[in-house]
Length: 358
Image (cartoon, rainbow, N blue to C red; front, side):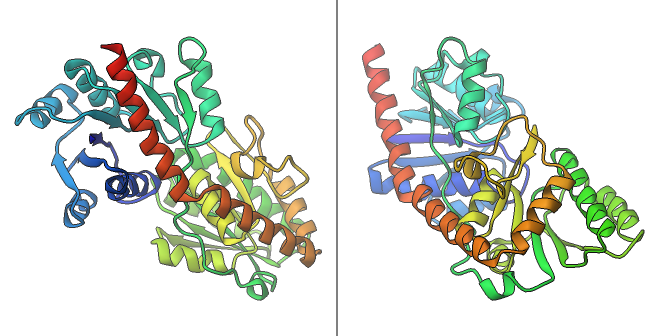
């Protein structure tokens, strides 16, 4: 089966692009072939070097992009689109050429699903929480929506328990520092203020990430940090996968959004999973699946974070138990081989459904 995979993106790297690359490279082992369409970039050029067929086009004008892609005919069997401009393109292509449409939603947004749900054969969400949100927005019961998690990318081969449990304890934050970071930024600054109030200098906050709000947050952090002695905050910028693995290997705890949180837990780092609508600490006595999916509409305060980290720091055996349990469970659940197989199974199901509909 030939699959056309349009993808919109701005960042040069990240979970979305890792997901596309993995699907494209692994598809032949399931008897499928993927063509990736997107803007000219190092990502697309890298795929071409690895033997993946690519098409350069601009999804800001989906109709023009469709004309570009269709210049030599449209001989793909299925369209697997990713959100926003590439999703609009995918809907147009599926409707014009009568092809089955699969759409993957990667984050906490619905991408106007109510407008195109009837065209799609299957909608894939990368977490159960995203699936639930999409079902609340999509027409009907949302029976086309399924959950297929992303695989693990940046897990450390082995966490250094001695380094992680030796002060200063490293609290790693792996996240883009943009508008979605603002709520987490407030939590971190409140955590620093709480530690200052207790004259607690056991903590170092290492922030790995870049984004439009980085400089403004650095200024705010400097104001808070200079008031009294307390946790050190270091800004590491955007880290590549090997660098992030090394950071996780010596971290006491981590805070990260979905995919990055999974990588941290797969490394054995007790982790707080964040979401755009709020954050929820997974370090306390919560239902175990909240470690992986977070909890909707619950905010993590700096006071909560300080209390839970401080409690964990007094019990090394509890930290080790949490670390080892999370690592094993995460690596088993997010086995990429399994989810790659499921995704390619979705392609077969979508093609079969299209044939039945004719």
